[in-house]
Image 1 (cartoon, rainbow, N blue to C red):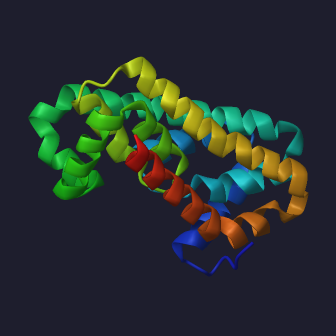
Image 2: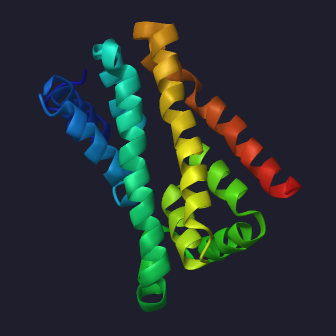
Length: 197
């Protein structure tokens, strides 16, 4: 854990995570953090989730499930914002989560690849908010959107639980050490899926 005088965002997040792990509200706090991460607050949920799973291993799969449920609630809200608010506040929503060019590329990918676009964005380090808005704004099937979101984020969160199960106390160090490599592999897979479909 970091020094209490360190005010960097990462240190503040780690201190918050430590308080959350020890709190009687850990389950609700994690669900809320996942909801916020998927909607408006770009916090690295893994930085909270892995230490929680390491500290309370008997509950690690429950933590993965709650992170998934919080994310899916946020995804449904993001989809609804795209569906019902895009005509009224589309420019503001785009400015909040991406650039007009990024949004247009995402819209084109959504229209041509749909389910696979949402699935690939959900497992890669690409911001998920744009995929949520684009899915709603284009009228993509809500059921397929939620299925792709559940598969993608379930893979991420339950994958972290398996990492903690297998690596124990070394999970966080392994995750940090290999995050760039894994992200690069997932990003290449994302590009391949988009290119091949």
